[in-house]
Length: 514
Image (cartoon, rainbow, N blue to C red; front, top):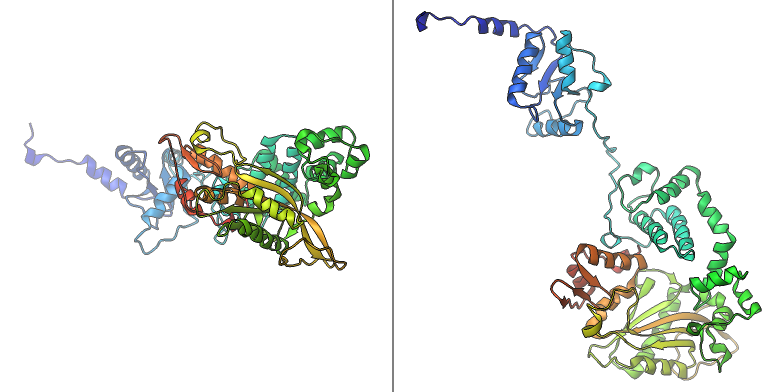
């Protein structure tokens, strides 16, 4: 046996000398150990050096080829970016090759660095332009801020026409789908210019995307235009525009050959019980009123007209219940300059004093000659009985009055201020128009929920209820929130508290125009 002091290890020395011979100085290879392991990386580096490759121990700006195994291009790019932190040179070279391990093994087998082919390259996701940020929105409309004026009205209006037509066809699912698509577009921070702007956005179904694509490419959608001009759509829109007429009645009349409100009078259509009013007074017939004042009731109510009606309502309520709180709700609370009707919420800080208020208010308005029509319903909500047991429904059960007001105007169309009292006079220089007005009385303890529910928009409220049920496991209505797990109601004195109960960021009324 040879003594230890005389033993010589010559083979590794030969290998080390051989490894220092670099044949390809213009190619510097770095192997990422991630998902590969130290042993395999060490073996490949030794093998590469034995073939004359320049194999780098550490990543540096001099590296030209980065090789990895079982990693995506995005993962490798992120790894390299993280290595640059703290270094002077933090730039990511566009000439740097991100390659699969197959390029290195093929090159070693060939005895030289092979030209980089597409099959060797790691694929990376395209990066957005530096001056254009990626558009992201949240899934529920109640999570998004939807301003009254937005950038994509050229896309939302066509989708809303299709949504309205789906309602006429009693296809609620399709109608909601179109409205959700339009709602997403309303929340975008800029106008949509190409389909890539919509990538990964929620609630955009295939049908909506087809319509949007056609509008972006051709300027209009054939489906939307044919719908807008179709006899059925135009007739249904005209017939449902009659006050008190729903989709079912309008569809039946369309099938009978009726196309306009005038056809209803010409053919002497009878009303069902739900449409009946006081038959002792011809003008109190709801259908006759709806047809007679069709133009008035379908003409938008202006903000000034809404404020004039607000003065009248405040006088009427305070005359019978001093100290009451009156709030203008609906679209006007969301900042709209016009609407199809005017909604008011009424309450009183002293709980219970609001009971039976509506008949007194209606009587005062009738004495002043301000009502063409009114239908009053009582409050039928009982928390102890109707909360957890009652199935959820869009319609609340407050005391309310659906009415048609006579709003005084000059012949030039300006609104006259509310008078000092007495029966409304019809002087020669004055006239009036018919306006739809909804009055709703809420107990003070439910007023925050009523305010939220009656502010809208319709889709925003639908999405709030959907969020409450699907994401929070509670039931939301215009009366309260019921938590079935804890078996309790959640009181709220403000809209902010309701949003907090639901785990949502508060959204002001002006940004609920979903």
